[in-house]
Length: 107
Image (cartoon, rainbow, N blue to C red; front, side, top):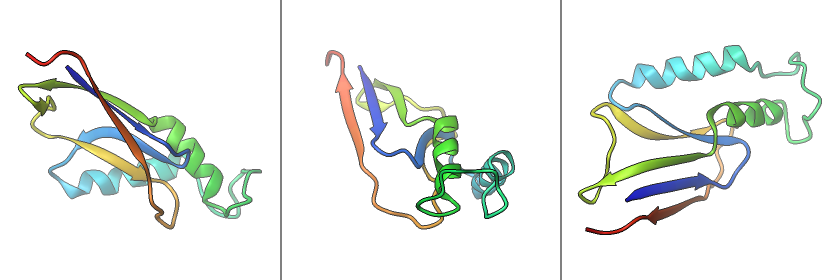
């Protein structure tokens, strides 16, 4: 059996990463901001919703918007240090919708 999760937005992402050390989140955000610059001097044309708009779309494309995780004995089968991250790439958070579908056979 598996669990499919899809984020229905284009300026946030879903990924699996370490969930124990908060420094990982800080470093991941630093990395994404180095790779995809924000601000008025960034080279983006699509800025109708602000300077963080196009960088959010690019970061979302890098991380993806869906996960497929096996379910074993009724639980998500993640590694010891793995957690599901919903990464907000806009400067101001907004509500997000995730569709979760389970498929397979119960044993």
